Length: 325
Image (cartoon, rainbow, N blue to C red):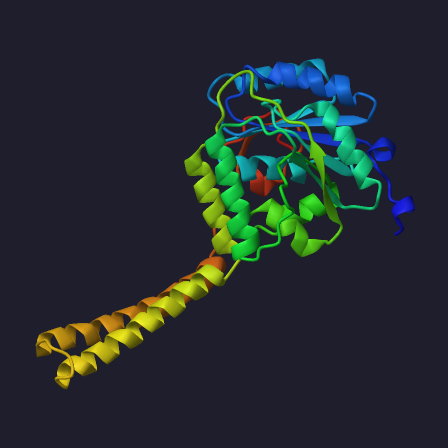
């Protein structure tokens, strides 16, 4: 299909996915901004409550009652950022998905830049912060993350890309349905399509509430990416263990033959260390392979929703709209 023939949000409508976890102070403000800036489109707003405990779900219910464009999913517990937006992507009904967080750090008006870029024929457009308003530690952490991921481990990630993005719903759902053991949307898009790009967008400081993204989250998220999308770390670990075991064998032989000072016990211990390191090397490689193929729970479970939800995604559902898709 040519770029000119592809339907875009101004033709087919737009689903705005808003993941939220304990954002009770921001929800009404973000809703008002999104509707004011993007009301020209045939809008669908999907709020995904990631197990909030602060009354966020009550606000979302009120929004859904007062505006038929608002739909929502509420999880049985906190499953994390990746699970929250994945659920929104999966149940989007429009041809395009705009991801915008409830904290309002990305102005909704910047979505027009993403939409304009998409019309060049792209399947995904990612916003890149031009004036990032986050603490210095987070900025340094992000810079290190992209350096290690792109330059050292050679993982294809859109340079500077953020969660503020516009994606074809078909592509977004395909990625979600892969059910990867280590899901990471930014790194999965380039594996499915080369039609993606980035555009500079404005960024502002959080005005209400507290950020849920700390260094522990960023670190664990980075490790998932590095392990799940590159074999370089596991290969380096295996090689290091094998080299260490080889050196241990040589030292053991040298000790046993008198070329190296020490007792027979030392030599024996070194040989045993060589065996242990060799076993560890093989174990590391085996765990990577075996772990990737193990059965696991679903990425999230829904307790309440105002949309028809796949029966496999439901757990302890009390919603009046329990109808499965």
